[in-house]
Length: 69
Image (tube, rainbow, N blue to C red):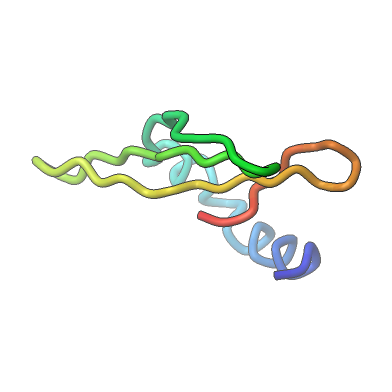
């Protein structure tokens, strides 16, 4: 997905972004491999703890970017 598309999505969700962020759980480091770092985001849903992988990749400038979640 292009930066422009992400910008469009964030513009739409911006008014509710703090509510969405409040619902996010703790990020726990999982592993690092070949320019990619993977974390697990935990979210409590009633009695269940859900886990979602969050991927970061290193771009050409050496910055870490959110790749997929």
